[in-house]
Image (tube, rainbow, N blue to C red; front, side, top):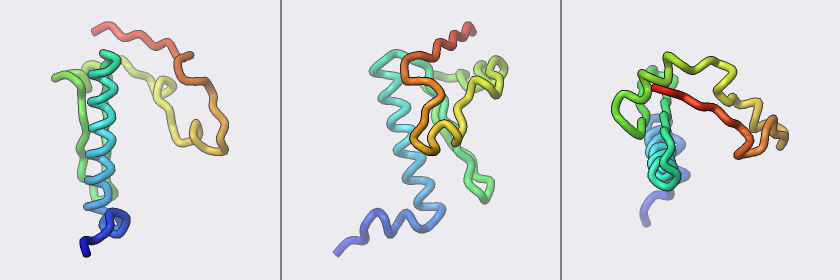
Length: 95
């Protein structure tokens, strides 16, 4: 019987690689479905970094424009409360 995904994901390298693949796949789907720019960056505790950008050079352009207040953090997902509802944030970037 093959190993279950949940058992594989307990290994930090395999688990983060699987989650990163899933996040990037969702980012690609979001970009293609809604024609939006998407950047996803992950960094493991061992320092390995990876991610996804929906078009070349996007990450470099956005990191120069973004401020920390523009990025959601873990607090937005704790306790079931939301600071703003989806669709109410209007952030516009010009590259």
